[in-house]
Amino acid sequence: MKTWELVFAALVVVLNLQLHVHGAPQVPCYFIFGDSLADNGNNNLLQTKAKVNYLPYGIDFPNGPTGRFTNGLTMFDMIAQLLGFDKPIPPFATANDADILRGVNYASGAAGIRQETGKHLGDCISMDVQLKNHWVIVSRIIKKLGNKYSAIKYLNKCLYSVGVGNNDYINNYFSPKNYNTSHQYTPEQYSRVLIRHYSRQIENLYHNGARKFALFGAGAVGCTPNSISLYDRKGKPCVEEINTAVTLFNQQLISLVDNLNRNLSGAKVIYVNSYQMGTGDPSVLGFKVANVGCCPVNQYGQCAPSKTPCRNRTEYVFWDSFHPTEASNRVTASRSYKAALPNDTYPTDISHLVQL
Image (cartoon, rainbow, N blue to C red; front, side, top):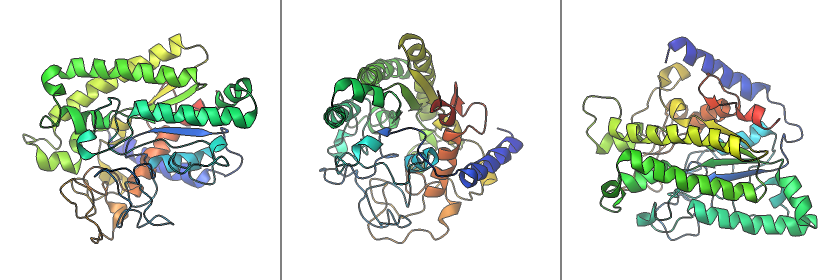
């Protein structure tokens, strides 16, 4: 990626967040499905090692630790802000009837497309179970609005973001001690298996009223501090074997976006290129450290409880061994909402999707 392109991206990031004016939200509600990049408290009551409701997580969040896997806001908190919501979308675990017409966040740390993904860490809410939880909310919205027709008409106008797949690689395919998928499938076969399952999940959402979808691709998992510390990079900056496998998934996901737009009447589906946003030269965007996280970590790659993190948090891409800092989330949120580079989103960005 050329330096001038990254400089341009940085300028657009700043302008997007400065020029956004809070008014009425651009969509009546925002539903969020995904993993730890979006989890804002759903894992707090689960028996799992994948929960972070302790300091230093949330050190820069107004309420302190909430279960967000970062120091402050997640990317999806920021997208909600850019959409005009004045408060974060509540987690399913604590959402009440007064909240649900604004949307619900179902995301769960360690969760994936496949049911077994992440289970070696303990309980997590897989994408299939997140869909069941969504049906609980849809049923409550039907009751609240008086009938199914009114509810579906309302839900048709909302935004649905889905970001799953990362854990199907980190906490499944590339964890052969705990899962046998890498023995069952080549990377090409595995990407197709995941996409077939994922396609059914998106169709489930469609049949429950969803029409506007932002599907987030898997990130550059081979470039995380965890991957860099665990695997032989063979002289490369990232672990190419992992990134190649993830790229196969993302290519299939772009094809799925085309198929869904073609075959689901009234559906508007976009792809958000998380992988591209996680590569390139971060120093042009003001980041100085990209190969280690800001906080001292435990054996699971999460911040060790109550250990002091770095002070210059805006200079770090990663908060712990897996998850971005708030500063890094700000860049990806902005580029997801309004694409800074041609390949950031496909076929359009979130700011245009919500107007369709």
